[in-house]
Amino acid sequence: MMIKVSTPIFSCNKSKYCFSSQSTTFVSFKEKRFLGNSVSCNIIKKRDHCIASTPTMDQSQSHTSQAQVAEPFFRSVLANMEKVYLSRNPTASAILELVKSSDSAPICYDHFAFRTFGVDGYGISAMAKFFLDFGYSPREELRFPAKKLKALWFAPPTTLHNSQGSGVDGPLPRIFISELLVDEMSSRAQEIIRKYIKTSRSGNEHAALASALGTLTWEKPIYSDFQELARESEYAAWTLVNGYALNHATISTHRLKSHLKSITSLNQFIEEKGFRLNSEGGVLKVSPDGLLQQSSTVADSTTFSFADGITESVPRSYIEFAERLVLPQYKNIPEKEIEEFHRRDGFEVGNADKIFESTSKEQLTRKAG
Image (cartoon, rainbow, N blue to C red; front, side, top):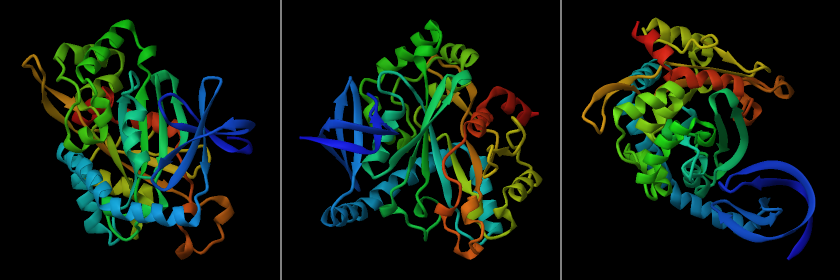
């Protein structure tokens, strides 16, 4: 069927994730369905284009019902991802307990972040599939040329947006997935990464499961390969030994009730308790508009037994903090009436670029010192 379209569309690349753009064209549709919405796709000049269509009332009720049925399973997967994360990151576990004991508000996660290898289907699309299947929506791509990275964040579905619980039982977090642009790496780095990807077989189809179990989908690496990758890209070395494990969880500070709702106060509180914060670009990372403020701890390290029998310390995960300030157009709304949609959404390249450094050797060495 051919119809004329003059609406925002999502351009989807071969990795199956979409980017917003504006277009007026004639398109031929083949329909795809995700939980909570339907997406129509076509191919124009070898590029996929998707249009999010508005479901009928019956469809909306059906999708809501499906979401309610699937919610316990979805949250249990998130809980297992969190469990693996906390088991490898005692700093995060300790800080979460400190905040809980000092503030009466439930802990709300701003976002979960994952790292991937952008090659042979093991990148963003591999981890994104799980979240797309449960109603998440792709939003904005971010590029980090110096690090040879790109990222895409996903917004949670409103049908599963429970605001009553704490942690993974509370409001669903945004999802931030980055990938290493492997084709831009040196030939030797590409060779190492592809060698392990090959041993994974179809592991990319089970990225979320690997994250929830805390296992690699490829063979355990040898130490010399880890070292060689680390010299070129610390991100690559981290991903080689951690795989799809949760890289960091982020506390939404403005949802707290005490003085800790101010990220500046929370940073001071954490440092007074003896924890080191990522100092790259300053402890507090602030977006150009001043409305997104972030900070993070330095990653914990644990011993890792490499395939060649060598046991060495490797960087694991860290915990981040984010305060999203109220948008200018809502500044006159009483504080008690402020909702999350009144606040600054999305991410900022400058902030994220410095947050990535939480697993860097420089920050880890400073922490050890």
